[in-house]
Length: 445
Image (cartoon, rainbow, N blue to C red):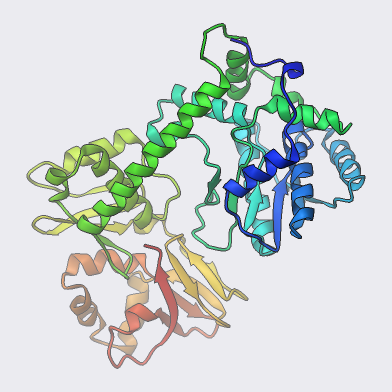
């Protein structure tokens, strides 16, 4: 079945778009941002949003990324700027600086766009970023993930609103909104034709060496009844409901079987194995590994399944996975701590008031200048000169030498420019009477 011909498809209207935005429940922010490439989808979204923002007294910031991958990109950016100027819209151009990839180009370019737009929104205190993914994009994403063997989460494809796709756990990045996921691409093109607005055709959209282009051709040229963008997009939406339910069950399981410490480690009650469905058990392990390892993505399903099988054995001898060390200090309980070798050796914090360390601890450092380092053996030796019995004090905090020796190297401290050692407040508060300075640090549970 071939997708609808452009002549058979009606244009999206301003009223229909207004309803789509209202479904997102964004409220009335002072300002929002939208990403635009110059293609029909993003240009239609930009112009529809421009009208919506005018009607609701919202300031619209329009962002485009100049990837510098093609010779024509500079001219296309100029053309886009001219088009938007005719609508009294200012274009903010973000340039992708640095060495460009020679492989995996589309994925790398997509990551660069997110990174640049997300950082711009963060720097300018914009909490809403709109993107122009539409029904066909959703269907293509579903198929790509199906071919890669994804489970429920992958097949749920893209959400209409979601957290920003970054490992930086910070509330300062914008939420991402996709109001057009249920809208046919042709209706967006029809909208532009009706207002006499041209758009740019990206030649990479016709390059069949890219997986997404191959999938797009498959969708457009197949003759199987029901194998179309609308049906696949609908299936992805149903998968989102299943995913939401599974996530709710996982949250309940975490509260029952996992205990997170302010010191950045987790304790897992092994009774979870006999009381939880295997799917929830796997999701629980995934969540703990992501949190303790400071990772944006979980281990692959195959590795999670292997870990679950290992935990079912009578004797657990320890394991390392996804930047996390797992070991046992008492019967029926597994400890998860950050693997030290994946932690940055040192990071300068000059002029930084807040800092996200190892994507696990949010540090409030105020006017402190120096470098952040893990509390490794060299730092402990430094503290011994000030507090001779510090190892014994640390042991009293953690109750077990193995826990102490594994957790301490996963914690941050600061060595000031004056050479002074500064400890995180949650640690110093346990060292009664220790004559050391502290900074605020909170574990991202």
